[in-house]
Length: 117
Image (cartoon, rainbow, N blue to C red):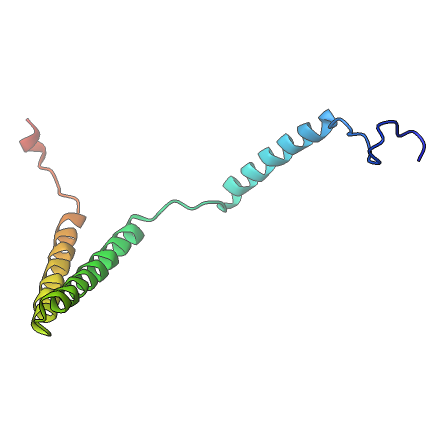
């Protein structure tokens, strides 16, 4: 144990070599440029995929929400199965209404050049 004067029994820390930092920066730049060149990396969200996810969320949320609230109404007021059935039906109606709204607004409206004046 020669050369160790701190009494801790460990090694003294070594300063980081500036060449390692430079190498890390170059490596990061190369990885970024390679990802751009090959098209890998984080892909942009497809608008159709976002629309499909929104439709799915509306359908599941409306139906599950109506069923859950209907079940709770039945448990609290003892109206089984009418509260469940009625609110499930209302959840389905709301879910499909939202889907029809999305489908109607999904297509861009063509503007008439004469109406811009």
